[in-house]
Amino acid sequence: MPSDAAVSAPELPRWDLADLYDGQDSPALERDLAEADRAAQAFSAAYAGRLGRLDAAGLVASIAEYERIDVLLGRAASYAGLLFAGDSEDGAIGRFYQSINERVTQISTRLIFFTLELNLLGEDHLAALRSDPEGGPALARWQPFLRDLRVFRPHQLSQEVERVLHEKSVTGASAWSRLFDETMAALRIDVDGERLTVGDALNLLSDRDRAVRERAAKAIGETFSQNIRLFSLITNTLAKDKEISDGLRAYPRPGSARNRGNMVEDEVVDALVTAVTGDYARLSHRYYAMKARWLGLEKLQHWDRNAPLPDDTDTAISWDQARTRVLDAYTGFAPELGRIAERFFERPWIDAELRPGKSSGAFAHPTVPTAHPYILMNYHGRSRDVMTLAHELGHGIHQVLAAEQGYLMSSTPLTLAETASVFGEMLTFRALLDAETDPSRRRRMLAGKVEDMLNTVVRQIAFYRFETLLHDERRCGELLPERIGELWRQVQTESLGPAFEFTPDYDVFWAYVPHFVHSPFYVYAYAFGDCLVNALYGVFQDGHPGFQRNYVEMLKAGGTKRHKELLAPFGLDASDPAFWRKGLDVIAGFIDELAATEGPDHG
Image (cartoon, rainbow, N blue to C red; front, side, top):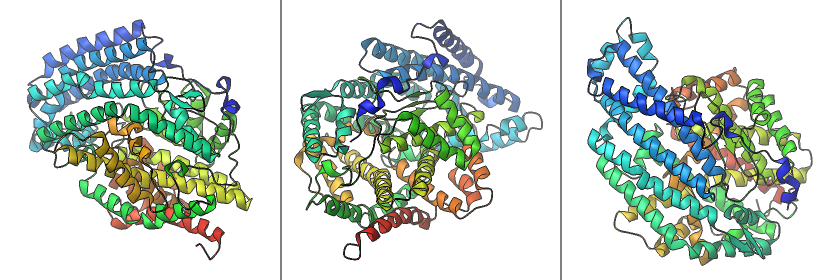
């Protein structure tokens, strides 16, 4: 097992948020919030109830001013959110985070009318404005913004109801999310006499020593069990809150709102879920049966899922080594992407330091186009951490390239937001695999990649199934913690297969997954992205002419194009059922290659 001493604090970077603001008491922060407040009042006075009377040039001016105010608010909210992610145990930071959220919500409430009134404009009216020889061309630039906004047209409520829901959000869902974050950050897991954060304890589930993994798993389960009623209350409350909102907005099912935001039809998501669940047997069930044999076990326990292989030393990888490997992969594919990635290392845009109170996950936050993204991760020196670095850098590169679309159109739907990150992982993995000549090490790398892909595809679809079952059942009343645990065990048993024997202490492990709290029904986007990238990488390997150029252009498009438009230059179509099979075939192919190393008796 690599020691965290090998990646000690002085070596690991910590971000500097001064590019946003130089402190919680920054005069610039106060000026931005004051300007946003003043501008929002003036905006409301100038445009509320008048959008239908604007000519094309006037409508363009209103959208541009709306975006400018949004940037001011987004910059402040990003700063507070990143501070809180860096240390959610600091009470002063927690109070600052809440106060900024409240101010941003209060100011943005004055802007709610704008998108609602835009959606009230008729299609004929907008078509007439677009045909205006003077203002029409400028309005055409905003067409993707208007297009995506109008997806929600059938689900929007009256201005009064929208205002109430918006204002109460700070004491509703966001407050429960904050309670989850602070509780999870404050938990300490007692393992072998050490009081570990949740992230550090979960990291032990990849330890080489099975006894260490078991003790860590039981300690995590015990700590979660002691807090399970609180986590169940948070989950039940948020599910009920979502049910109320979905009912008011007439969404047909719990995942529909997320799918609309992802600009993907419910039926496309259903096709993905059906394809993955239908392939459980040839993917995860088959792989974990092989892993059980490699580990010499009749049955795997949940703490064996991420166990290293017997001959896997997983030598500690320094931060500098990780940097070199990832940068070489990106630069070898497209020098332009390598240059962008290097900026994250040259400047304090990455926080990889291990410290108490810091978020245990990993993310790339785009902040606002006038600044730059920031990356958070926790670097333990494992090969998986190198893949996480490659993943988050993919997000960061994507966010830098898409920034030219502006604040309102740079964000990519979640189904496509994972494309650059997963593609970056694949680039890094392939570069390392191609350079490896030792058969044993190559086998370990393949196994590690298969596990990562199963975690990204099979595990995330199982998470999605868990959410679906939970939210559907919540409509009939509050779920007891024991029932939530039963649903969790059900989907884990289905997805991981007969190689596993789940112990009751695993029934509480659903509690640590932050996506269930912060981003309901987000998780299928990982599987969507992985299968999409597998298909995309196949096109690249086949020597598609101009692939790199088309790929960079796809990233630059941000949220201005839908997946059909973005994938068309590569000859791919995500609405084709065969598309998902193509992506899953890549994982199955890796498993076939691993099976071949076992010989004919076990293939």
